[in-house]
Length: 186
Image 1 (cartoon, rainbow, N blue to C red):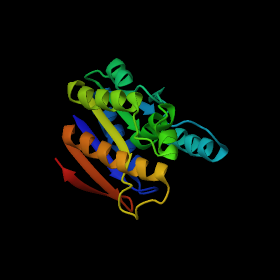
Image 2: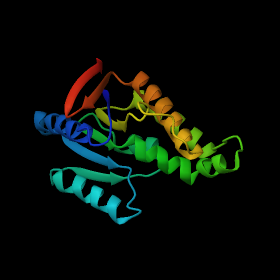
Image 3: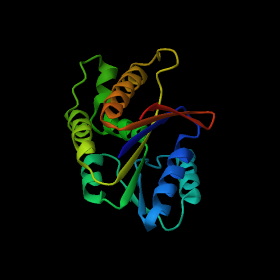
Image 4: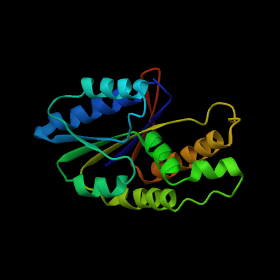
């Protein structure tokens, strides 16, 4: 089963995902592997990562993957495992900058990013084939104004497209606002 959990910043989406993963683990002693996509590029991000680590149960596994998410999921997925990916938003950002798509927006060139295209396509193709429980956390960033900066516009557009593509291949989609989950699909 694939489950996408969407929400804004500090909406409670990660806590909700962790709660669902914990419920899965409690059923018949199944295991949870937290798949972290964040990079601690500064002190503030390091504190966010530390906060997430501190609230996870000690018996959960952890895999860090900033770019090649589909390959990591294929490697880790088993029928008795819940993979909790937190989050697709940071993964997308990693891809856009590692693949130089973000830099291309600065010059006004058409964005051509083979790394981004290949990795997002691989994720969409891989998700339906995976055994076990897959929980994916992502930010809903499209409810504000259109960003002024070209890189921000590219990111908001691609995040919306990615969320739509992932939602299409997930059996369940939940929106979390103010800590309250609302089922959108499933």
